[in-house]
Image 1: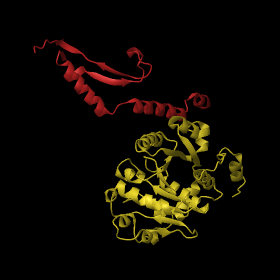
Image 2 (image 1 turned 90 degrees about the horizontal axis):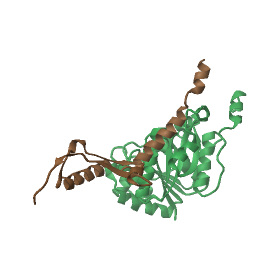
Image 3 (image 1 turned 180 degrees about the vertical axis):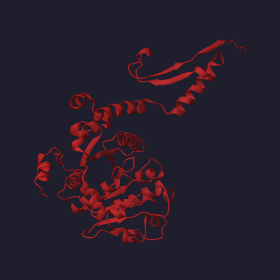
Image 4 (image 1 turned 30 degrees about the horizontal axis):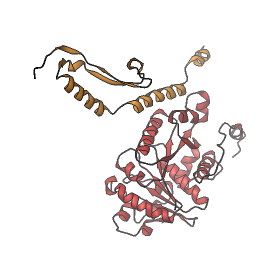
Length: 90
Length: 260
């Protein structure tokens, strides 16, 4: 029994390779966290001129699959919830 | 004009110093003029691995601070006409030297030597920047483990960013028994992940420990690691050498019949 179950077990060498490929992919595609943070701050600043942004739920990330954004490669995805429409008078 | 080669890895303990000692000694055996520089200021080890620890008078920091002439700091390796070690300081730290000073030093040395080989410290901070400052090419050492390979990938990125455009991979401490069982990445797996040029595969070999114990690099010996390191040396000087067949039954059989 031990013999059969051992044969079915996934070999750890394959695990190592696939985990490495994944982590390196995201490291290569990813912008440095401080840059992402800077982009986030800038976007909030711009949009806040017009509407009230729900900053707590604001999310921005690089996605390896950019199909939704119409890209064959990666895409920058931002989720920007708005609290309420705020009309600013200039 | 010679070449400045930095031996680097990111991760510690993967065999940078062993590789530096063996590749350097192998190139000297091939009648090249070679100088090794230990860049791991404060944690020097190339001297003990080379068996030269009792002959240190001056060191790299003394040379940089012009407390001695460069020839005074060289330790000549016995048995070779043109093979030296420039040890580093043990009681100082990485900030005692700047990348600019290192570049000036290696630029001078490569006029005199065929190969200037730098043993880079682990990490990607100043010690690393000092070591790569004047490098023409790099040997990136890794083992077939996720942590070492990931760090090697990071090093590749940093070498690219710092205009070290030529680098080759050494996969060290490969255990064929584990690869066969599927419990270790093969050299091919590592290459597939990193996609850079492979210059050597060194099997895990207990003779390495023995050679370190006595301070005599085993490159060129009949051991598998000795052969693997010598092959790396041939490839460094541009010769094409086939990779060792680590699957050879011979090793197993010779063990079985007690041959040496």
